[in-house]
Length: 269
Length: 250
Image 1 (cartoon, helix red, strand yellow):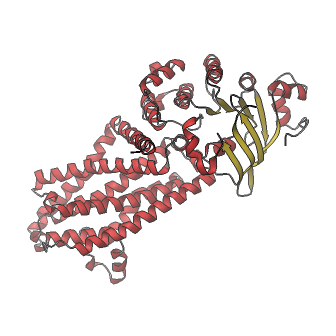
Image 2 (image 1 turned 135 degrees about the vertical axis):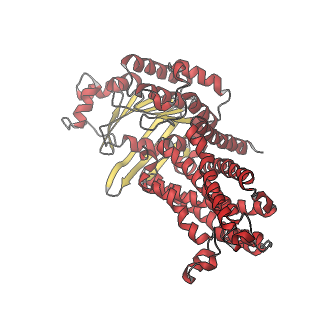
Image 3 (image 1 turned 90 degrees about the vertical axis):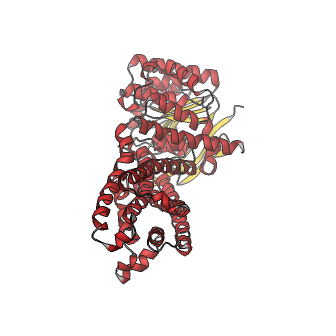
């Protein structure tokens, strides 16, 4: 490893440490990591218990709704964790200090991704263990495809997180609610809890242009048809490549805009 | 001939139709402490922002340690640092945690001993484990200065370095900066509204007005040229157009 690479990892580590200190020093933040995923999973667990006796579709594939909610939460946690970690720098008016330090924007993004990964693993991992204990449903039973689903959903969550973080940098804290709302725009068309064939015809092409749709279709193929659909996985990977490249481009373009318009010095509480 | 640390040529910054900085040129020699004076909106913060790379200039050139700051700022950022009361450290982290994070960002070895040294120098020892957001304004400014000196910068950019400090603490901080500059031959660019501070610390002064450098010189030369007793009187003369600057500097 070259000295420059080593130095870059030290800076990335510094940013991870910064978020560790933040979470360690705030029990509401610590609790929040696990609270929402566990609550969502429990709610859908009870819905599953009800539907198992009232719906042949759910009864056929026990755990389909719980697995779906856990995987959906992977994407949601990835997006919101990245967004919250970034916006924390804006809330604390710290961007000015960060951008005059040797930290490079790419290193900052890498640190945000790592923090998001850890937060997602803690939140969704905790909820997944709780699902085994409470409802005897193990998402881990999906086996190797679970890793592929997880990777695709987390990458899509990061892509969305980068774009909404950029929008806050561009439009100020007035755009903060976008960070919370943006991902729910893709939820109905991602077919999290139902096949996208139920969507109106005009909406289906939009749904198929979203990586997460192929993940959830793939999840149902495993749980209902007991088939691993490699074609769906490849679709998700290809679309994610486009999503992640576009989001990085948008973030860097907005960062340049911020440097032209002096927003790195002005943003704050 | 002394080494040039900052070299600024025809630097301009426009925000729409507003010209915030208008074709300014200046050089800063190694080991000098230069004051950037001007009223509100004169272009001081914009100039500092461009020197730090937080703002992209509309035109012109900035070289720091010989490097083009617009293209290669990351090559020199490890040798620079900055403090401003208008840019905070994360509120929820303690002072120590903040300094540890920035210590890693600047690649400092033996971070803890450096932090303890700076905490002692800036009278922050008893506040090290207090969240930065719970410090008084003066304590925050000292914590920000400690962060700015973590990497023993060869170029220090300071915006209102003693803002919100009581006179005793401000005097100690000025003394510290004088010693630091003398011991390390660091170059310091200082934006301040405190004229006695500028008179005490600065070997040279650049006076900005409406984005242009309207005068420059040592504090004593400026005072003599304007026929005044203090730099504050000179500042007021320039700000209120009572006496035109004897000669524009560019």
